[in-house]
Image (cartoon, rainbow, N blue to C red; front, side, top):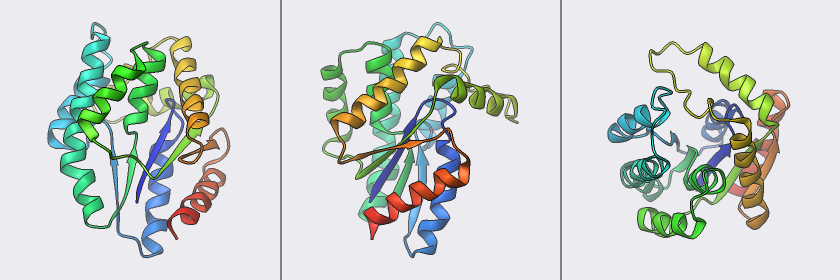
Length: 210
C-alpha cells in the first residue's frame, strides 16, 4: 500500500508519519517512511537546492523540473522497490505537492504538470492521501518555530518566505484536489493536538489497510 501525506507548511506531516509508522509495525506491516524532496542520495542534494532560503532567484521552471527530477529518482530507488516487496510506503509529499505548489500556486498549466507526472511516475498513484489542513497563519507559525529550532546549518525556509497569498493558494489547491478525488483523499483538521490528529489518521489508515 502506498500512503502519502500532504499539507501546507507547518501542518505536521513529519510528526504524524513518525506516529503512524510504529502503529503499522505493531499491526504486523513491514513499512518504510520516505519523503520528497530528499529521499535518495541525488535527491538529498536536490533538496538542499530547492529549500535553501538563499536561493531567491530560482526560476519557477527550475523549481518544477528539480522537483520532478527528485521524484524520478525517488520512485526508481525507493518507492517501486518497496512496493514490489509488499511493504507499506508512507511518503511525506508526492506528486500532489507539485500539482498544488507549482500548479495552483505558481500558475503552471495543470495539463503540462500532469504530462510530466506521467513521464516520471507512469501509472503509479497513492492508494490513500492524507491532507493535513489548517489555517495558513497557524501553519506558518509552527513552521517558523521548527526552523528556529533546527540544528543544521542549512535553513530550509525558502517556501516559508513566500507571501501569505501563495500559501493560501496552496491550501485551497489541496482542498480542490480532495474534492476532485474524494475516494483517494482524506482531509484532517490539523489545527488540533497531535494525539487527536493521530487517532483520526490511524482509524482511516487501518480501515483502508485491513
